[in-house]
Length: 110
Image (tube, rainbow, N blue to C red; front, side):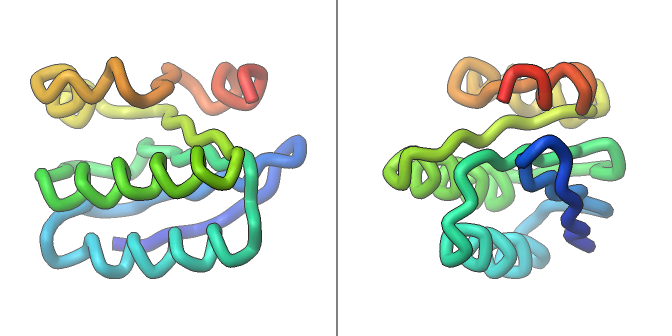
C-alpha cells in the first residue's frame, strides 16, 4: 500500500493505493501519526485506488477519526469502489464516517 499526499483548498488529501489490510495497516497508522503531529485539521482520504479493506484497516481509520476529532479536526472519505463501500455499509461504518462520491464533493463539504 502507498499513501500519497496532496493539498487542495487547505485540505490534506491522502490518496491510498492498494489494499488496506493487516499487513499494511501499520504503514497507514504511521502516515496518520505524522498527520496528527503536523496538526492537520481537515483530512480527506481518497479511496479511488483501494481494491480491498479488512477489519484491521477499518480499526485504523476509526482510530484516526477519533484522534482527529479530539484535536478539533475532520476526516472524510471519497471515491470508494462499490466493493469497499459495501464493507463500510455492512459494518454500519458508513454512518460514522463522512463518505462522498467524489473528491470535489468532499472538498466542498470541508
